[in-house]
Image 1 (cartoon, rainbow over the protein chains, first blue to last red):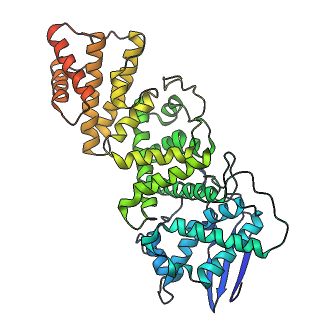
Image 2 (spheres, chains in turn brown, green):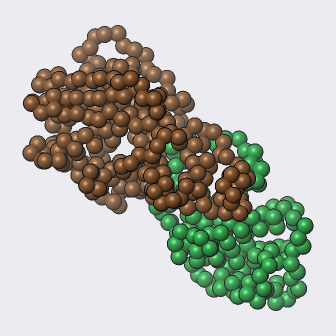
Image 3 (cartoon, each protein chain N blue to C red):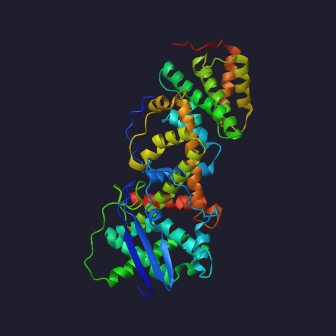
Amino acid sequence: MAGASITASTDPRDPGTGTARLRLEVDFQGTSHVFSERAMRTTYSSRVPPMNRRNAQTASGASLTDWSMVLDSAQKDSPTRQESLDRLVRRYWGAMLARARASGLSEHDAHDAIQGFVADVILERNMLAAADPDRGRFRGLLSRSLANYLRDRNRRRSAAKRSPVDGRVDSLLDGDAPAAGGSGGPEAAFTRHWVATVIRNAIQRVRTDFEAGDRSIEWRILEARLITPMIDGSRPVPYAALVNELSLKDVPRAASLLVTGKRALGRAILDEISQTVSDPDDVSEEIKDLLRMLEVDSR
Amino acid sequence: MNSNPMEESREPNAVDPLSDSLRWVLALGADPSRSPIDWLALELDPDARNAADAICRSVPGADADLDRLELLKSGFKSMRMSGENASDRRVAARYYAATIAAGVVRHRVWITEQRPERVTTAIEDLQQDDSMPESLRDLAKDAIETIDGEIIRRRPRN
C-alpha cells in the first residue's frame, strides 16, 4: 500500500481475558497513527473489571457521534483528528473484521486486510472526506467501502481462496471470535457484529454506572436474568435463587429491580445508536433497519 | 409453557438475542412510560401479552388465578414504592389497584390487607383515569359495581 507502512504486533495473551492483544501502527505521510489494541478487540466478561471510560466520549467527556468523528477525521488540520480517527477505527474494528472473516479470510488475513483498508482507503484516499451525512448512514458507507476494498484486494491476489468461515462474528463475549449459529454473507456478518458491538458497549456503560452508583444488586439481577443469557444462551438464574442470594423481600421485588436495570440498558443502547446517526429522530429507523437486516440474515 | 416465575423450567429462549434486544429497545423508545410496567408483568406472567392482559386474563383454578394476581400485585406495589420516577410510580399504583379489582370481579375476594374504603377509592381513581387502558377501566367499573352489590371477603391465608 503506497505511502503507508503498518506494524502489527501481537502481545502475549492477556491473562485477564484470554484475548490476544493487537497494536496497529500506521505510518502515513510522516504521521504515525497508533490504534490502541484493547479497544479494537474489546472483550466483555461478567467477571472482568469494569471499563473506566465511556465508549463514545472524548478524554474531556464530550460525547461524539459517528458523523462528528467522521467530519473531524476528514479534516487533516484538525487538532483532534487523530483521536477521532482512533475512536472510529476502534468502534468499527470488530464489525469490519467480521465482514472480512465472513468473506473467507483467515483471522490473520482478515486483520491484515482491515489494516490495509485503514491505511489505503481511510488514510491515504481520505475516504472520510467524501462522506456525506445526507447520503445515508456511516455504517452503510463503511461496509460498502470495505466490500469494494476486499473485492479489489481479492482480485489482486491470486492466492488460493479460503472457504468461508462457518459462523458469524457476532459474539457479545469476544469482539472478534466467530460465534455459533446462523449464516449469512459478509454484509450480514458486518451488521451482526455491529449490533453486538453496540449492545456490548451499552452493557459496559450500564455496568460502570451501576457499580459507581452503588447499584450492585440491580447489576447482579440484570446480569443473571438478561445479560448472561443474552451472551451465551444460558438460562436466566431463577428468581428464587436471586432472592435468596441477594436477601430480597420476594420475587416481585427482584423482577421490579430487573425492569429498572433493563430500562437503563435500553437507554444505553438507544444512546449508542443515537451516536451513529446524524439526526436523533433517525434512531428508530436505524433500529428498524438493523432489525430488517438481522431478520433477512436469519431466514 | 410454564407461567410460574418461581419454577422457571422453560427452555432457553430460541429467539435471536440481538434481534430481541433491538425489539425491546424499539418498544422502549416508542412508549417509555408504559414499557416498564409491561416488562414487569411479563417477568411475572410470561404468558401474558402485556400488563393489562396479565390482569384481565384468568387462568384455570381460582387459587392459581389469585396467586398469579397477588404476584402481579406485589410487583406493581414494589414499583409503586420504588419506581425510577414519578410517572412509573403513578402508573404502577393504577395497575396495583387493577389487580385488586380483578380479584373482586372474578373471585369476590380482596387480595389485600388494606381497608376496603381506601382500596375502593383507588379503584375509582383507576376507572376515571383516561390514560389507562380501556380494559382496566372497564374492570374497575365492574369491580365498583360488585363492591356496591355484594359482600367481598378477604382471601383466606394458608
